[in-house]
Amino acid sequence: MKLFEAEQYIKEQLKTIYGEQEASNISDLAIEHITGLSKAQRVSKKQEEISKERAAQLQRDLERLKRHEPIQYVMNKAWFYGMELYVDKNVLIPRPETEELVQWIAEDIKLSGKDVFVRGVRQADETTQLKILDVGTGSGCIALALKKAMPKAEVWGCDVSEEALNVARRNGSSLDIRVDFQGLNFLEEAQQKLLPTVDIIVSNPPYVPLKDKGQMHANVVDHEPHTALFVPDNDALIFYKAISRFGKKRLYENGSIYMEIHEELGQHVVHLFKESGYAQVELRKDMQGKDRLIRAKKQ
Image (cartoon, rainbow, N blue to C red):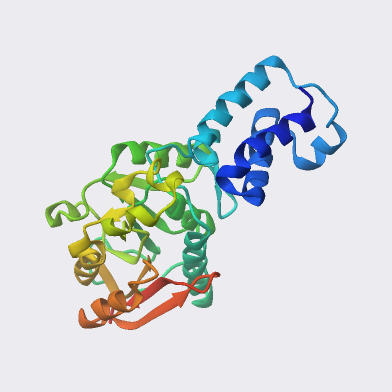
């Protein structure tokens, strides 16, 4: 099978599942993953035969894709904020809107004119270094991106899933970015004592009510980890409540919380943080015009 024939074959097999444009995008990624050739390189080599080993691997990958498995899991690879990350079924695939959350934090710190906060000494563990905590770190994408953008900052990430933490630590090691990843259940207040007092709390927590499960694509519901996606219908704000309470106790004065949210729950989250005594609670739309990001400041 020639290279261009293999690409066409994948597109034809997938277009009834994903649509023509998405099938084309997936085909590009799958072929590049198998051959190591970029799209531009493949143009000049399109008449070349692919080896039997690569053809067999391509067929195995195709069968996974036809079962709605995301291409990122098939490749064990995703890109986030200029970083190539390892991903598997134990972590969510990083999304563009989460990059927007990271960018918001980076811009706010840049506007402050420095990547450290100079404070009067109030606590024994307080330093002039910027301290950041990522709650529900998953693949570590947020924590690692912030540490890469602000190397002088101290950054922690926590998650209840040991499998997810293994992925985060693997990414930290391969990227040579030092983040302290800790395993704990953030919803258990007793376990929160293991976490530091910080300047910034950031989180993309589970926020999809279980009732919405039937409206979601099979590639998400059937393959991405449910503990990182879903919350009870009767308590959709469970993680935001926990973050709010934690912030009141463990966020330095004038510190900030940045969160990704369900597009339909923006005003509910804003009300929660205002009622909890936070100031300058801002709801921001993502690039698709959806209410997706929130920042709250501790007075």
